[in-house]
Image (tube, rainbow, N blue to C red; front, side, top):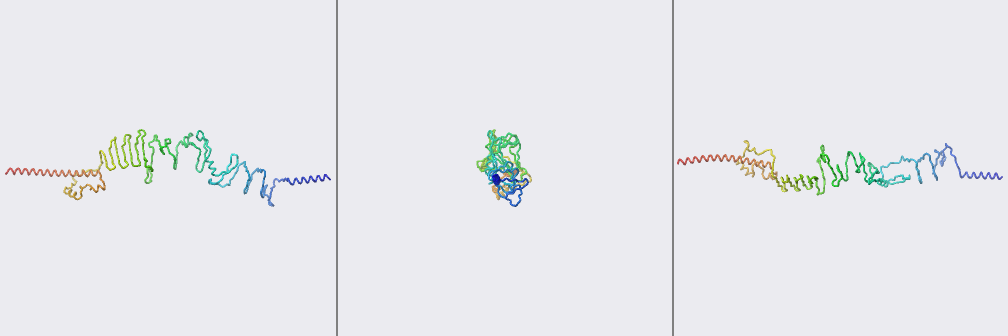
Length: 387
């Protein structure tokens, strides 16, 4: 009787233990559904509802999530993480970026913080020069914030930030914030410094074929009255061969003396060997030592047989009426039109030659009168003899 009681008790205990620690064996080809009701599961394990795993979930293949997933704590991915369907943005504004640290932990980063990181790259300085600068890029640009970065193109020993051995061709504008030096090092005197070695010209400009109206071979702008438009200095003699000032003054020096000076009020002075040869004063006075004028015609036509010499009676009548000589401009005409020195000289010579003809004619008349007078004197003598 006791054996039966012990057997029943053992059976009951085993039954109770199985009710609290149940182990189900799933067939190899079967699907299991939890909470799916009468609907047959379509996967090896299909859960209709929430699932909680307090320990470790190991997936040997892959996990597919049809809608969304939430991870309450850490998510570790030992392989690659592919996100093919994330939309692309055109720029960084107020977005947040996911970055991975050295410990492998993914953290979020704002766009502003990312810009600070890009512009604060570490630079490897060797003797004050960056030997391995960190380069960054942006839309249509490549840049480095490291100081004293020397870049060489065509060789390996740069001495400037950009050192090019060969030609540089630009199809658009070249802009320099400081200065440009050609054939020379930088200086603090000028924005453009050119040293000419074995070249015919320092600057050559060619506007052949330019149909732009009012084109200028050279154009300057300024607003400082104490400005020299151009100054040429001979470093050997210490003289200034050419100087042009904004007040209108201009000087030319031959290395020994100033041979040309244009004053601020229109005066002009020329020298040769230290001797003043020509001067125009501000009152209009012209001073010179000799003047030679070229001409095409002269007044010698007066002596031609076909020239009509106006009779003195006609000259007298013309002068009384017009108050000036024939073929000579009047005072009013000269005041308005001015006097052509060459033409005036020709007119004066015309009058001199006409006077010469008048004197010749008058001399003929005088000689004729003298002859007549001598004849009359001879007749008077003969009459005296007959008395």
